Image (cartoon, rainbow, N blue to C red; front, side, top):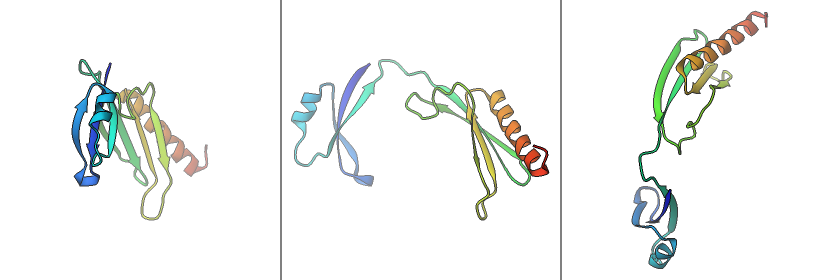
Amino acid sequence: MTKVYVVTEGSYSDYHIVAVFRDRKEAETFVGSNVDEIEEYELYEKQPVRQVVYYAKAESPDWNVEERSWVAWPWDSYYGLSRPVADEWPQQGLWPRRVTVHGSDMGEVRMALYDRIAKIKAEQEGIA
C-alpha cells in the first residue's frame, strides 16, 4: 500500500486538511508556521475488505435481547474478530446489570450471550 502524508491545521471544529502529499519530505517542506501536524495514512489501491460485526446485549432483570450489526473496516477495533467477545457490567446505581457480545458470526454471538445469561441466572439461584 502507498502512504500519503496529510498536512492539517486547527483543532476541534476548526480542524481541517490543508494538503495531501505522497512524499513526506514534500509535506515537511510545505509545512509553515501556521500548520500543526503531518499525519500519515495508508492509501488503498482498491477498496479494503469489510467485515460484518454482530452485536447482542441483554440487561437485568428481564434479560430481553437486543441485536444489531454493522460493517467494520480494517482500521476498526472490531475488525478481524475470530470468535465472539463478551463483556459484562454489574449493576451500578440506576444502570442494570448488562451483558454484551460482539463477533463475526451471529449464531456464535447469540450462543455466547445466552450461555452467559444462563450462567448468571444459575449463580443467582445458587446452583452454579
